[in-house]
Length: 523
Image (cartoon, rainbow, N blue to C red; front, side):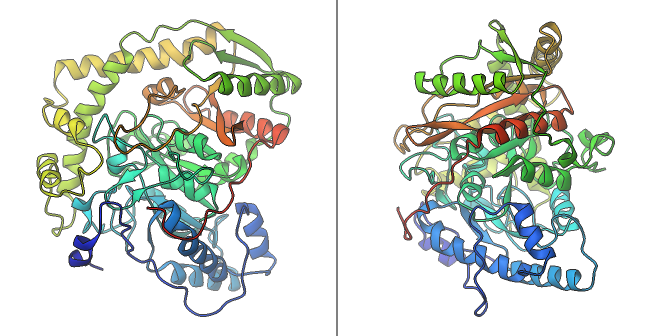
């Protein structure tokens, strides 16, 4: 399938690349998908109350109705209905593949999936039709999932400009928060967060380098898990940093998040970071226990500051809930980040150039921009690309000296040690706690194309830089805008974090679905 470039040239910078967005084939019995969990859908399928084809059609119809005002979806898989029909045949023949059989899942558009271009939101990659699925996509398909389509994102996973507007891409326009369409969906997994919150799929896949799963999950009022780096293969994903990149699960419940992680995790020979993934991979749903908070010690990261008074008030209520559930809270007031932020940027800038050039070199011949240098040149020649913000991070990355540069090596070694062994691991040991908590971030800020994002407090740096897992679950609301509670732990502690998050979720029922937005384009 080729992109019609004449059509693309007629799009404004906010236009939606509607590859594969089409009417559903023929009439069908409606299936009300809004706010259904994976387990809800699986039960209806197992008991014959519906079929995957009907479910998939219903999600496509919902996307067609609601996406014009949200800009959460870039493309629908052209074979989505065929995938669903094949699933229905397997089920009828007693050959179901796994726990996600017939369940529609959306992917962030920096993840390779056959039949759709992987654009990272950039017009330079409009013809980047991958030759094969990313391993995590193969894993989802092997579990029976229907790959429904691609979600919008902060272009290049928010690593093009330090003055960016999260959720904006030249391909998909600006993703809007369904709780308030004037406000950000955060990023870079913006469309994945929005699509999950407003039920445009059963669940979605995002990616994170530092905050790109957890921030949009928190701000859109859903669950998001950034797992340990190396639990899920990064092959077939447009990279930023080999040290910090990972895909992550985004869903409306902790249980669905666990199910999605179970399907995606596993070793991949083409990604050396995953060499031990199979030894850690398990059925993460087995950890879920409503009593998991009882009798545990959890560290409260008071040294993270800058949160609004309203966010802190919701956090204090959450702490009271934890205590009522049997948690012993331990105040942790001091931590020296040193120059971790500057060193992290050095690592990301250096690894981005190396990783992107490697990825681009293997793209199909119709992709004409095949190096970071050529992407920079493309952007300068394409007015829609620089309509909202520039590309200073691209230019700084292009100036880096490679993986043998002594400044890079020092920065990488220092950040890993200070965030991991001397950071999360030390805090857990010294304070005798099993996990660390903090507000994920403040509520969504107003979209501002002129000035870009505001500086917002965040709990993401330590787990991001260390490569350790980070789970955010809905904590409450500030002026009808959701905020999340972060649970952080040591490497490979996904099961424990999911258990703690599940117990908090069951005790609070803090998530509230956003209203369906008005049908029609808000641009």
